[in-house]
Image (cartoon, rainbow, N blue to C red):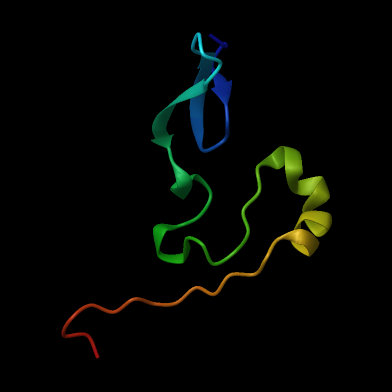
Length: 76
């Protein structure tokens, strides 16, 4: 089992079972609202601090996504 790993959005530990499968056990907090509001979540690429220096290279290779507003019944 690994020591606790800080993954910015959650903390996790990892271990392998006898068959070689790697398991991750993660916490819920701080969560994905750690660095953006729930209302605007997913509208911009968020990177952990250790990857900010490579932002321009990462933005060139990720596929753009379209964020659409989902309306429920009765919404106009």
